[in-house]
Length: 296
Image (tube, rainbow, N blue to C red; front, side, top):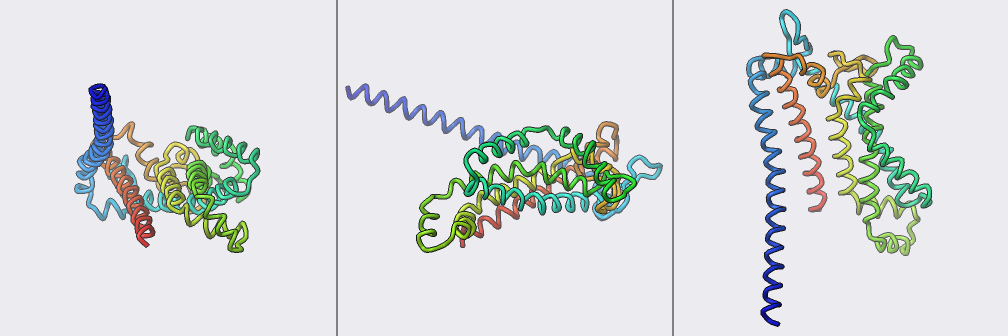
């Protein structure tokens, strides 16, 4: 009997060791992939920045990669990406957040299930479909309403991006709010707080880590999107203006990579490196703020 128990315990320990080893290997593969991408982008993108010049490349206002005298200034792309992502976040985050609060705390069950199904469907729609719908309906509407020669603009891209980030923000925020222990809310209500006060002064602060994660996902989706914004933004390398055709960092790479060569191709890798660093910095800043709040 003792031998059987010892054998069983030994097999159990062996199985746990195998599982730990598998998780360790998967974790190392993930970290290794990130490091590999980082190294590859640095190796591929740094030579162009050194040839063109850092300030000429980062702060130049003209991109003419196929001209007789090529110019590789990406300031219009950087500013467009910042304005486009910022605008999408300003629209998408409040809308997604309040929707999540309503679904988690106020909505009837049938309505909640229907909206959750719609949000899940929205999350599964390919980017090209968002771009196609925007190109067929949103762009002509902007042209007509604002009396413009062309509706393809930064404004159209912001609207499309705001819609695209909604599923990530709603679903993650909803999960975070539903994970808040009911005892917190019961204690608040027992002390005389109203339902709305309880939701926004107790539940939301308790779920702030999950809500912040939702915002990070939204920022990543917005700044990394290419196909949809290419179809509605006009894809012209202009300095950003709300009703002008513009080009994002992502669309700059996607639109020229197929026919690029030499320094032009290296410059596109440099754009990808800048985009990668932007995303890393945004994630690092948000993670720092989250950790600081936890320490408080």
